[in-house]
Image (cartoon, rainbow, N blue to C red):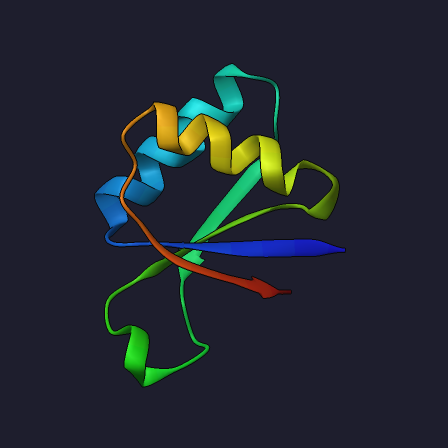
Length: 72
């Protein structure tokens, strides 16, 4: 199963993908389609086993997240 970590922009999504890749975590980015309430947020998809570690890496790397996580 995968989790979608919402980030604030495509720039942050690209930064997230690069940070996670550097730490050996595969991720995919896509425009979010969960809700219009999340506006222009982007989805960083990661394996659910790595959700907590991914969030830690993104926080340390300064990636602006919305705080929302969805099952994919």
